[in-house]
Image 1: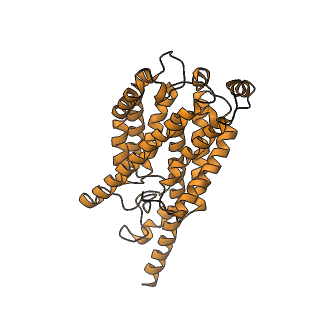
Image 2 (image 1 turned 135 degrees about the horizontal axis):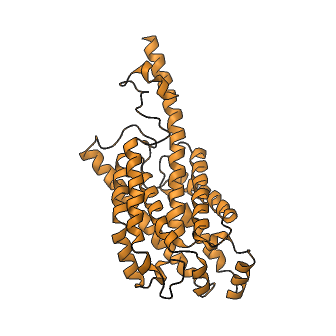
Image 3 (image 1 turned 60 degrees about the vertical axis):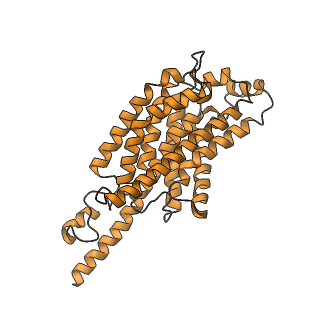
Length: 320
C-alpha cells in the first residue's frame, strides 16, 4: 500500500520507500541466501570428524571423534564463511539477519548428523542429559559472542561507512544491547510458546522432523511475541528462548529414575519432544526460527508505521 503513495510524495519525502518493507532489500536477500548456502556447505565439510567414534547418529560436540577441543576448533574454522555473511548482513540491515544465516547454515551440519536416536542409545541415561545441558550453554555462549561481534560491526560500520547501513528497512529501529525487563519478559513468553509448540510438533527422533518442527515452532513463537511487544527494539533475548526450552527439557529428563524408564517412554512414544532435540538442533533451527519470526514481525510493524508516516506526509503535501 505504501508503494502506491510514492508517486504522490516523491523520493525525498518521509514516507517514501524504495521497496516493500515486508522483505529486505534485494541485495540483502541475495547476501542472506549466499550466506546460508556458502556457510552451510563449509559446515558440511566437518560433519565426518564431528561424528562419534562408533559412527552412530546424533551429533554432539562432547562425543565427537576428534575430541571436544578438536570439534570446537573445526567448528570455529568452518563457521567463518557464515560468520562473515552474518556480520555484513547485520551491519547493513536488520540485525537478526545474522543469526538467521548462522542458524540455517548450522542446520546443514545438524541434518548431516542424523537422527538423535543414536545419541539416545549410546548415552548413559538419564545422567548424560547433564552433558547436553553443558553443551547447550556452550552453543549459546557462541551465539552471545556472535551477537556482540555483530553489534560491534554494526556500530563501527555506521560510524566509518554510514552509507553501508540502509536507513529504511524492516527492523531499522532494532539494536542488540543489554536487556531490560520487557526484553527478559519477551524471552520467557517466546520460550513458553516455542517450547509448547515444539513439545507438540516433535513426534520422532528423525533429524528432519526435529529441525522442521523447531523452525516452525520458534518462527511462530517469535512472531507472536514481537507482536505482543510491538515497541520492543532489542531482539537479542528472544534469540535465547530456545536455550531456555532446551535447559528445561533436559532438566526434566534428569528427574526420571532410570535408563529403562527413558527407553520405555521412547519406545512407547511418551518421551517429550524437547528431549529428542539435541543442542545443535536448538542452536540451529530454533535460533533461525526466532530470527525469522522477529524479522517478519518487524516487517508487519514497520509497514504499519510507514503507512502512518506516508499518510501524514500526503496530508502535509496537500495542506501546503
